[in-house]
Image (cartoon, rainbow, N blue to C red):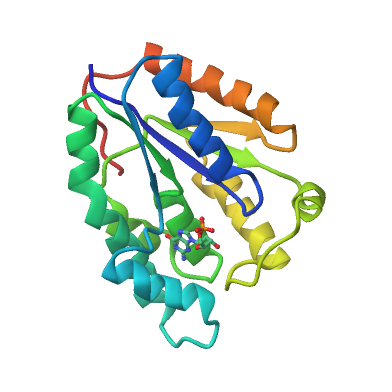
Length: 206
Ligand code: DGP
């Protein structure tokens, strides 16, 4: 049986990184399956280092189109590796993916169809977990940091893009305002159901 491609999306402070680690652990220990975790953007590659510079230095001059294509290229850098893992029976968990790519550029006013096009053809998610958190809870968790997109208006617009424009049949919305253990339980229920209905073929992002 091939591995599943599980994507975790959500706003800053939703608990994505913690839950990704718990998913990896639960898939291994509770389901007895191999599992690996990737994070996008992957800041360790040459493209990722340019992205990191863009996010951390708000005076970096790069057009919205150019940075959009770099985020997508950063996902393509790992595409074949992800496919190989899935075919080898390894479940792959992605902390952010194409949906972040489209949402952040859409809110800057770029055409949604154009935003989607460079990601078309990437391995498709079997399950997208959207960790939804209210602004109040995000604030209580320490608020946002100092990177380029960590501002309340941007986060609000991105949440709207995720939920109103990008949400699709393979999505499960998780109430991430709850405590970590409750969120973990909800996520694991969705993952078990995905494994019970996993198509034979890896899908393609369209
Ligand atoms: P993170 O390391 O998960 O905190 O992500 C860094 C920031 O980059 C975060 O504000 C979300 C944003 N981001 C993630 N993926 C993409 C993408 O593909 N395109 C754009 N424009 N922004 C992204």
